[in-house]
Length: 355
Figure 1 (cartoon, one colour):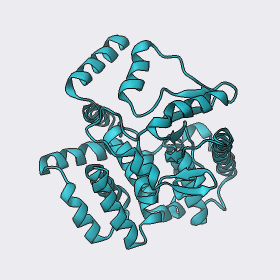
Figure 2: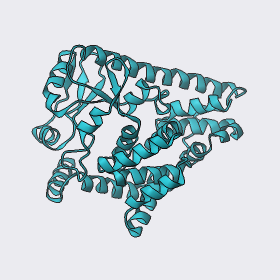
Figure 3: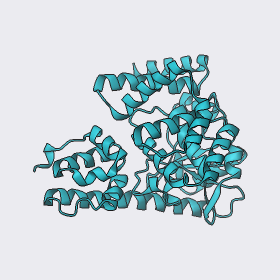
Figure 4: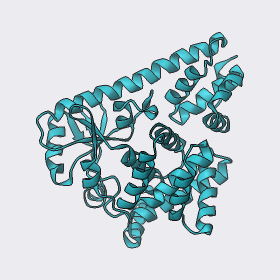
């Protein structure tokens, strides 16, 4: 079958995400369309891991076998490249007297967690104490990373309002680094304590640190349901599902998760994380945890609206409707990130720039 005849099938991918064993029952054409969809959703590594776990693709046609071989080579290179960047950062921070913590994709890979398998990472995120930010910037710049060129407004946007410095690009490898001093913007309605995150970070290989399990899940939840745009973010829900399945086997984790959600003022993102991981991917969560975390639910009207917007956007049920839902969630994310006057000025400036 010619390669051009296949196309991404997000609906089929979502069904596979909910029940990976279904991979065994797919035709070669369906498998190829799922590969396309997984690639588009940045879930190719996850799909190949599930195919191996369920012994899929052993007797596929030659054209599909070639696709799988190529996909394996790509995901291997994705992960290898990130591990190399982590090693370069580890060398850069030799001798510094402050902790540095990997976040998100790089952390999943460094800690060999399920969401890190074959992961495609756009940038490396590193958290440092706010009072050591200038020192960390000096270290990073001395090892080849440089700020991308920004106009004065965008630079002010990062320095005064955001939780990170402007993106930095390595002058030789072109890898991108985001240096964080928090996990949510300074103007956000929520303000989780970076000091608490850093204090409880875990060492996994000498100087390399990642967030503790509860904080790792809460950061993923805050990134998706408070700071993110959600549109096209099915991978982020898969991350939440993978983390909760990995860590959620003990009551200690769930108690820490709930306690830290309260301590960091992230109960609402935690509620959404549990709700949509369960609704979309059947993530196992103890009933008592669900009952406890449901106390952070919004009003029934808001809850129903979010259900419609989130699920429509994540699974792209229809083009026009999905775009409208995505736009609504985009506006919501900005509303949560900035006070009204600053938001109005910011959106007006962005609109004028586009025009």
